[in-house]
Image (cartoon, rainbow, N blue to C red):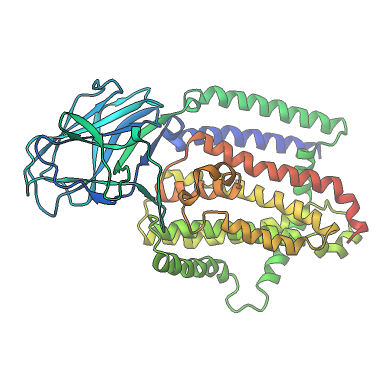
Length: 494
């Protein structure tokens, strides 16, 4: 047993050292800075032909550390126009913060966004107010482009009107001054504009110092665990690790039993692990892409990722819920650490999860979604999802022993949780005032993490790892503590 404890500590330390180095190079630039983009409003109509001498202004507050470019939605009236638009970025005092940029209109495409890249990024821009000023040099009737404006935000199904302050309003040049532009209904509007920039992270700059500090803390923690073990004191983490290793044969048998019972007398057998997410995705794809007109990019991968994650969570927690009362005869006859039973159920569901990733990979290839090295970070999201499901499963298994109505309440709550998780809708439809509460859902962070890796092909910002880990590990620790404190009472209630 002593050698096993030493082996576990050494393996934990080796994994930290290897994964820490690999993570730095796989995550890449996202540890130092994250590219972001913010859109103002959805297009409602155009301002009409933008002819020589006309000027428009749009004021905005930058939400990035560095502002690198802007994107303007333009219309060409389905023709080639020969004009030169002068693009200026001014500060609140009207002073230019970058050299004026000349935007040639000859090769612009109709109803598309044109990106104006700054020669040098505007640094220390967060919280500062800037003014975008556009001036036509040579535009003439039937030889000029137009810019689009709006006063609402498209959420995929509905357009929500936004409250626009006069300070942020689109202004047009009339006479000798700029005045706020209003649509035919008298509403203040904004230019259809996207702001593009980067947020800098201190995490990347100090990564190796944090990495060394984490290694030292882990080393001290493992040393403490081992010293307690030598003195005969029980520690939760090492005890659980040793028990899982000791009863690995039993865990394999329990997992095998779950698999056999699940697919017993089934014609397709394990193929259902592939077909279930695909069939669910197919139905929801038809409903939300045709009836509800979803505009989410790469909706197939977006939807399938959410379905796979939630299906695993739902299956694992439901199986853990009955894991203790379902093994009552075995618990009353043989001593086995009782958290082994929910653990084996979660492992069984985890195998189904891995199998369901195969159709997801196939869909990535079919939709020609680029697969980048960031996909190597996928195990982090899967591991956090496993801990979350196991922790909630431990809590439910404990509650089920003392309160048998737990299974019915959990069915209702899991259905509510499904609608509170962005599986088939974008999180942009959630009002800003509710987002802080909405983001307390751990599944939101796991699914967001996986979609960023699979769809965008990039790693999220460092704080996303922290939020995901904290919100998944807290339920795990709570479930483990509650389960351990009550497991001695199980035999009296099952």
